Image 1 (cartoon, rainbow, N blue to C red):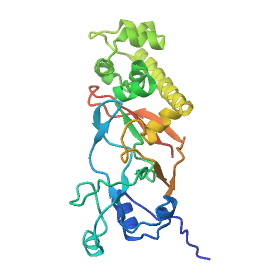
Image 2: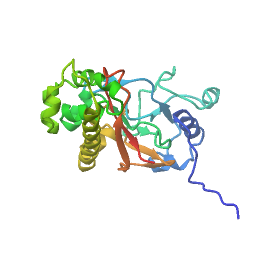
Image 3: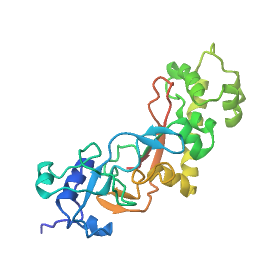
Image 4: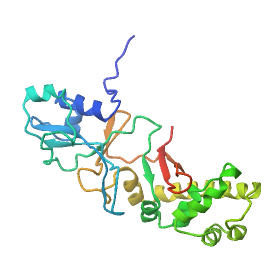
Length: 262
């Protein structure tokens, strides 16, 4: 017998989300958000980077869309195909409090968070742990890039060796010829760093909030009060994620990346 799963709306991206919700004020999400009186309320897609209050740098915010009170008639709305973003010629400044939503949860390949050293230290308090997670550990030919990784992490090889308990690493300098012994140690350090970061995050509600919602990092509406997970709105923070090394531009700009587990 053929069945239909009405709970699955199949939102493919932020644009699709905005258009569907603005064209259907009876959608269950309006009720979940407690905004059933939504005649002059519309979803707006976030555009560009926003100021992160903890690092004072402009980065991608946690919310992808939010709701604002907008003066627009039905004819104009249809002309825009129900799509509104922050670059629109409409006034979107009268946003509904706590209406920011992260809608990136459906694709398991997306990044939950991409953390620079400054943002990482704000969360985890360790430059050495950041370096441990972002070192090159797979190919010996890449290991010279780790000089740049440590420099970007604002530490030296002695700091690194003391933190991870490998005095052997404290002897590394620009003339060091890296070999398989270094590879073994680097791989071990990176694995342990990933584990330690994950463990600390899962034990710390503030870190989890920073990764998924960003209440302390962004002003409303660019923090995410809500998450769209498997086409369902929730305020519950998931715990099924993993840590990995992001692209680093040859070691000059290392990042720690958090991604949802499959």
